[in-house]
Length: 73
Ligand SMILES: [Zn+2]
Image: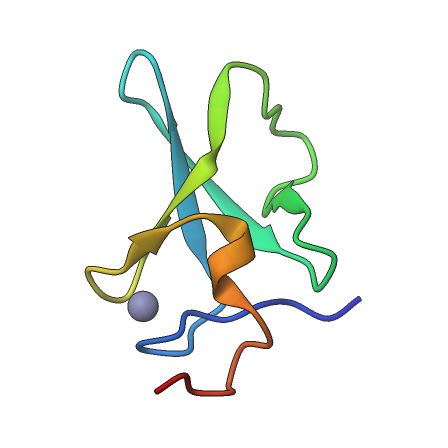
């Protein structure tokens, strides 16, 4: 399974938030599927349409990640 990386800093870890503003660490597969970094975590209640990069200030939808290290100009 390939993981998508941040278009700015190219790390593979993001977090998502829920209504209580709690954060959950996730990866995004190359099918744009959001999966928890810890398999025992549940994504219930978390907004998977908005990702927050752990390494920089990038935020966006899983679809906006596209092929990871390909830069868009
Ligand atoms: Zn980043």
